[in-house]
Length: 402
Image 1 (cartoon, rainbow, N blue to C red):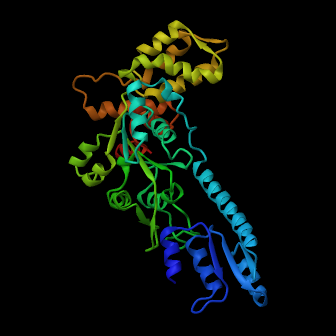
Image 2 (spheres, rainbow, N blue to C red; image 1 turned 60 degrees about the horizontal axis):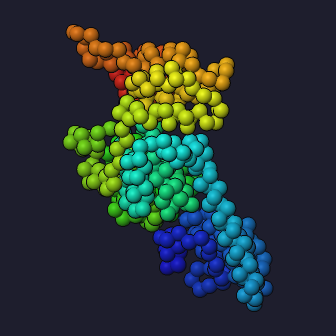
């Protein structure tokens, strides 16, 4: 029993157990270990007379068994195979967690301001929590990935959770995992992102959107480096470097009581602010060159001039989308100014307020025009306007827009 408690607390990569033991036999230990960590290989040590029982244990999830007396090299070979199996299992879990995430790209930051890149390099030398702030589309996730790639954790997992995209209940399960039967629909044990990112980096994208009730649990992980899965009272320890991003003014959210002050201080150990693209227009030519590389096309001076003059409400993300569109649709090798001109006008630039018109009416008109221009795609509209999907959903619900 003490061994199982230590196993649950620390998360070992392999278990070797005798089959016959006083108090609790090897099969009972196997069943409990598989409940706690189904993917950890379990080796049974048995005497010749209990081989049949050992085979039964393999049917219950044991990796293999070895018969006493055995040679040390036999055990070493079995352990090596079991650990290789464990490593493949962990790699598969991480790959499944990373499916659909954008490509890691320090390349974009080769075109960033030297000050920003130097700050990321310095932050990478520490394990302290980093808070990256900036408008939607400024490259916060790319900055976080670059920071990870520059750090000593670069060979370990980098996982991302979009805190604005999930309800409080789903986000808790996504971050901390859950036990089988913890809630309706929890048909099997699931590891959370903190567990999967162990030894690596976890990005909490749009951390300001986390429900106040869940903020306390997140604070505990940052303070104690430990957590409980949903439906479990067993504490697990992790070694994870946390990076958080936000497009909101977090100190203002703290003042309004929407975000915990103690959590803000824990996250804001190393602050990084990314300027909007309109405040760093000198980077536009370098960014355009980067986005055009894979298409092997060039851009005319007139087109580049138009890009440098535009206000970029969607920041670097909007620039990348326009260059991608132009490169695909351009019939020749050069992108002209006339081609991109229509995309730099219209709803992406909010109309100027009219005297006497209530601000909420103007806001609604801007949102509805952008929704129409984006074919009703709410996620894309939220990105362009620099708000979260949840904020957009709440506004549409308030206005009775289905």
